[in-house]
Structure formats: C-alpha cells, structure tokens
Image (tube, rainbow, N blue to C red; front, side, top):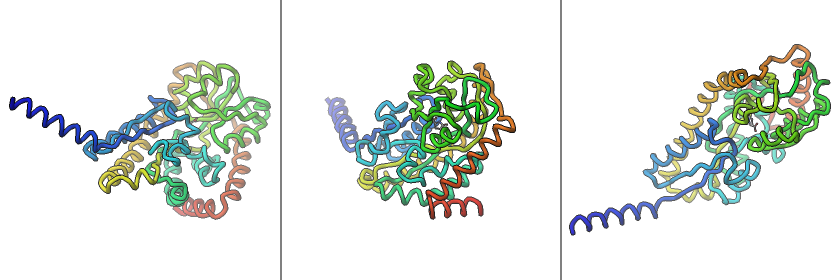
Length: 322
Ligand code: PCA
C-alpha cells in the first residue's frame, strides 16, 4: 500500500514536470552525421541539462522537418521556434547576409573568425528586425570547386551546369561562363546522378557527406571563403521563456559556437583526405586558374561592397583594422 502511494506520488510528480516542460523542434538542413548537426544535438542536450529538462530541444537533421530553404521563414513565422540555416542563402534578402561568401576576403579559419566578429553585431540587429534572435554560428571548411574533368582556366568551364547554394555562387558561375542551378546539399547527390548539375562549389565536408566521388573526379582546393551556418530563435518563443531558460540558451550557444568551430578546424584536413582516399584528384589550382578566379573575386568583392553600402564599409573597416 505504502509502495503504491509512493509510486503514484512519483508518477504525479514526473507527470507534473512533463507537463511543465516545453518541447522545441529544431530543423537543420544538413546531413545528420555532419558536424554542424552533431554540434546542434550537443547544444540541445546542454540546454536540456541546464534547464533541468524544462526546455527540451529536438533536432531534425537533413532537412527532414523543413527543407533548407524553408527553415528561416518557418522560424520567423513561429512554425518552428528554433532552426539552423546557411546564412548566405539569404543574401538576396539583404546583401549583409552574404558577408561570409565574398570570394577571397577571408580564406582561413582565423580570418573567418575575425570577419565574423566584425559582422556579428550588425547581423544581430538586422535579424532582430525580422523577429529572430541569433544564437550562434559555425563555419564550413574552405570552399573549393568540384568537376568531372581537369580544369586549367576559366574558359574550360564554359556551359557547365553548376550547382550553387546562394547568390554569390550563382554570380561566380555566371562570371565563369557556367550555368547556375540552385540546389540544396540534401539533393546534391541526386542532381549529380541525373545530370541536373555537373559541377559545384562547396567544402570537402559536403563532398564527403554526399559521396561526391561516385559522380565527380576533381576537387580544386581553391580556399575561396568559409560560409557559416547560424542558429536562430523566434523572438516571441524566446521571450516566452523564463529568464533561467533564456540564460541556458545563451550559455549553450556560446559553447556550441566554440565547440563547432573547433570541430570544423579539426575535421577540415580529414575531409580533404577522405576525398583522396575515395579516389578523387585533389589539387591546388594552377597559376592561370588561380589568377582567373582572383579576377572574378575582385569583381564580386567590389559588387558586394557597393550593394551592402555602409554595412559593408563598417564590417570591412573592423575586419581590416583588427
Ligand atoms: N556546404 C554547404 C554550404 C557550404 C558548404 O561547405 C553546401 O554545399 O550547401
């Protein structure tokens, strides 16, 4: 008798706790096994521990809940309280979102960190105007070019169907005489298999995640830029949390940014080595190709500065004076 009262009391207490707890679905666009997604899961766990289970975040990787290009809108409109997306995918909305995809502006992890520090505050302001709170951002490894044959200069690229992931990569394709096709990483393997795309730009990480060696042969390690994924919360959902849970989100986000960035650095060489291990030819671009790409980069960099106006000027000044 005493036991059953005890068990009933225990059940009621745990039920009470379960009712009080809040559950947040967190859509993420990239492969479940990718370090961004794994880092998002660690972040969710940390929030769970910090809040004593009061806020449970459930990560849905691989674009399974919302596709990559739906995630920002879903969070803005409260269909999902929190999510992760490639920041520069939104540069059509505001060129500021493309600060990390300007070719050859910041080409190492170290420079990418400095650029992020230079852009972060302004980005937070712009996101707040969109009902979003920025939590953390983590870079991809440096971007390179994937082809199905040797490429020694820009004219070799003429007419190639080139998978892009933002406005900058579409512009790059156009300036190189290629045909841009915007495709989510989750659909990249399919696009290469069916010939919808014949080449693309990305990190060795995405090449590895999508087993690109099944379709393409050459990776040019151009080290063009390091785009970021960022995690953001719907402002109304954030405001509805108690202060302790809000602090937990912020603290876990600080940790996630450092941990995810460290993981990206650690894995960058490993990802490249996996491309070679799976039979791809991994090369630095020849002098001619490097010069051609640098010229395109200079054009794009000037165009971005003009488009982003005072924001670009402030970011570049802070970045260069650091
Ligand atoms: N992978 C992502 C963005 C940048 C990267 O390295 C992609 O290709 O979609």
